[in-house]
Length: 211
Image 1: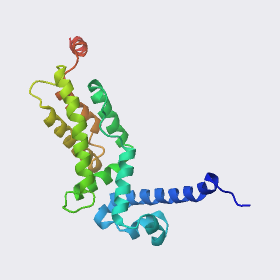
Image 2 (image 1 turned 90 degrees about the horizontal axis):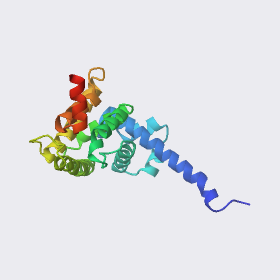
Image 3 (image 1 turned 45 degrees about the horizontal axis):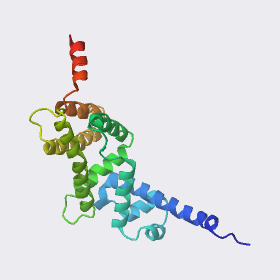
């Protein structure tokens, strides 16, 4: 007697999901090394160790695979925190440190972000939306910092958000090129400390240490 119900479907479903995951992982490696334009579906199939027909059964179009890769990248790398503003520096530094453990994904992100500036590139809407979302999360945090007197005089919340996003992407690109010479977390912490004033207690502690 053949099994029926969820238990019977679990085997084929799990196998299909495993294949999809293998294809996405292979595409991440291919696109990060060769770019989206130059990395072909045939390259991805070879990297995944499967036939083209198997790959195209799961991803009929190259654009479908790219979107799956971008979704996986965002799932593995958390976005800008929306927690209390006082925790912003620790959150940003922690995420940057986590990114150092996944250089392949950081490289993929950098390559695709640059390629997406081309009009008509399938990843362009993804990156436009992603940057808008990040800015939309950061600006209110900087506004709350300004309202509580924590944002330094003359710092505009919108410009602070744009500057942080630009620095983060730029310093990670330098790190990919010169990993032994670039301290991503140190650069980000230093930049944020230029924007955010310490609390009175923190200020007194620093002053006593300097004294």
